[in-house]
Image 1: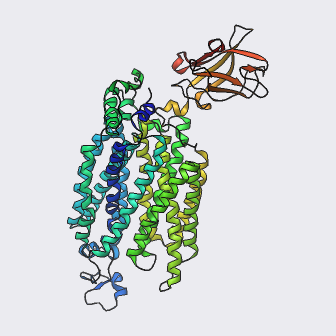
Image 2 (image 1 turned 180 degrees about the vertical axis):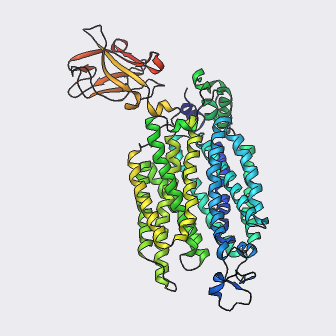
Image 3 (image 1 turned 90 degrees about the vertical axis):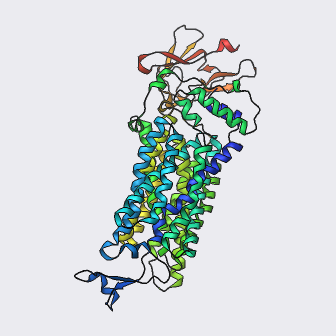
Length: 584
């Protein structure tokens, strides 16, 4: 039995998966406070130079000011403690960029490790070290300590979060993946808003760091309760271990099943020995196209999402309210993505989401900031919320979409590269803020519209099983031949790859279009179908249809048999074989 078949038998989203989801989401809800820590801990207070009356001239002094005086009546700041003003102001932006650089490297290294040694091992080590580095931010005494710790927070948190998400998607059915994406994104949004609330209540930046990050201790439960991914185990030849975990999940879900009924397909020796690398993501044509478009998706989502998030506290009005609203708007956006993906599919959801994101950014470009004008501040806040709604919906969608487009054998590596491109966007976003309002929103708006168009070239994955191998994505070389009732010689009428047809090699199902190469005698729009026989004993049977032809007929020639031959590595293997005689 294939993996998805066993998953349905034990419960594709029962009590066990709910518990695992709750635990995995704890990484995102509290991780948002780590991500956006500098927004409030590194706010710039009003300042001047000791003995200088004109504060506007403080950064133009030559020699530079040796003693800054800060107004800390409303909040304390890391900026004041480390003197990150004037020519040192860029270190605040660097602390955000280096965080995303850490994620960039972390998902690359930890993603590859997770594909090689297992999801659970990598996730566990990452969580422990991430907790230690997250708390260390409250103790920094120098710029270099700040940058190193922020890098480690990104490296460990990004890697552990990605691996836990992939682990969870591999234990649930296809019709629940969009729900999982909705939960992961929404919990991050809740943490986003909670951090803004904490910043409003807590004056001291070091205490704010400790209080907002403290709940991450709960993620230690993930190490104890979450199992290894049974899908990864099965794909790597560890079928018995995978079956044991699936059996335990079934028991927790309240299913009364025998252990002997949990029987997965054995992996062939070739699959066991094959070692996949990052090169396999672009080695073949279809994989290359899919992955390049996904990388563009992730880059744009991260660039625009973090760009709008980091600038939300400067839109006008209360910075705490604007920041919290920027987080809360993501919840209906995530719900929109969830419903839209289930009803209309992944691709339409991405197109609509990018369009909304682009409209919001163009609107912010048109309505420029105007200090002291409350109507302008309100209009810009509303446009920012529209943009944030769209890009948040796209971010939710791309998590689901990418998992369904990448086969199991390279899924963690593939998601790692996707997340890596997202971090490039995250690294760039804080730097665009220094360029000014106009160029920043031009880049955001154009990125949204261009990326939306690119998604036209990706396939729809709604309600389709997760691909296991690259061959399922690319197809394998085959020859399709048919033998009529009057001629003993088989005639070739299609020669290509199984990727040209919608069929499942593992179960022998065929359904798709083929074009004749035999002088047209067999017809040009040949369609091979698989249907269930009226007789329960026969199960599925084949039939050939064409324009004006009846079942089993082709231009008046009855097809006696259909065979599909696999020509991979110059070895001939019959992948599919049916005969009318067997169904008489």
